[in-house]
Image 1 (cartoon, one colour):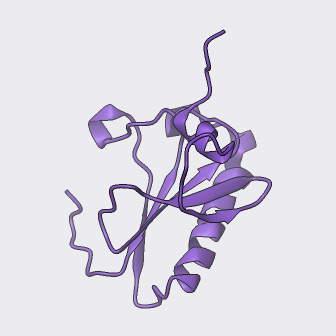
Image 2 (cartoon, rainbow, N blue to C red; image 1 turned 90 degrees about the vertical axis):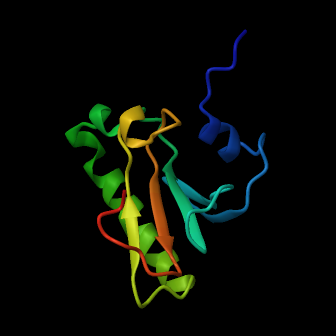
Length: 115
């Protein structure tokens, strides 16, 4: 039988090693293996929602949880001077895993526009 779990589900299950930064019953966070800033952490819901386009009103509390975890991690990582949170939606925006995830970036000046 084919494994239909996303890459992030495999990380959460411990089947793929990661540098885990946070875990609770709703989400988990780990350091990106190709960081775009000194701090680059991915915050992922345990519920496998493919993209922002698949969110429903029932997911509002879960998405809010991702942002409160981002704030906690930013404080812990010493990003008081500023940080960025980013969702990518779809391949044209750089989404490479079909499981929503919030990027937490910081530790260097972040220009605008982002790219």
